Image (cartoon, rainbow, N blue to C red; front, side, top):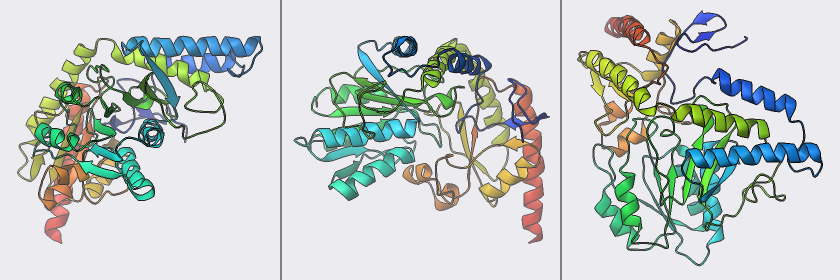
Length: 395
């Protein structure tokens, strides 16, 4: 089926849908897509080539690199473009682990991270005997700063903490975390900013490694990036010679890189206004859904409004998702990259009961979401909720 998207009135194959899974992926912005197409057609040279067409492509790519660094207010850093945030996380964690053999083989992270962080540190533990420490967090998902300092006192190569959790939307206090890390100059800080960019302001000061992906802020799939301190050295995951960066070999995807810069610029425009719009819609959702006796709102005051996680007693999450799907209404469970849909690892880490952890739904909004869509969603949700409860009563 041919797919196309229209802002404020998202359509799939011509039919209107209510899309509330923006944290999984966003539809591409028309301007971003136009930039990708134009560069693909007008800049055909390989950016690694030494002839005129190659230089033209490389100059355009380097201009996009500088634009990205400028938008992140990080002109003193360097950018490595990757295929995704998952690759960028792997490059950050594995790359630094293999390049500093004289430092402690210990990594500190949390149980609130994306699978591309959790699975990667476990890989280092399994294959290279790294010791992995998980810092404690409270019932709201906030990192225990005292426990973080206790773990740092034992020595660590890397601390990896997400800016915003992808399941519940917990925003960590990065300012305090960075303040603590100043006392441990031999420990690098990696921040997965995938769910933060384009939603809240991000400050890359004192962050050695910062990762994100364009398809989370209305860019194209297949392009992510790592913003790194120049002093940090990584062992590449992909070898074969210098390309866009010495840290990732291969023919540079110039059209994707330019589209990334365009998507980032558009995403950061009017950020406060966009946030306030999403916050208003989130409050409306919380108000209406909290009236259901069998629903628990899992997202708390430490969460960004773009993600609303709820648990529904007596209804399997996948059953509700497929019920809503019949009305062309789309939400999700856990994260799109999670293989385990049976239980939310984040809610487990937040010390929630099993019944809550196994019945969670993630509703995710963007500044393109309208109030009419939310009100229509609430009507559809009521129909699905009533139908599934009636079916449970019959059984």
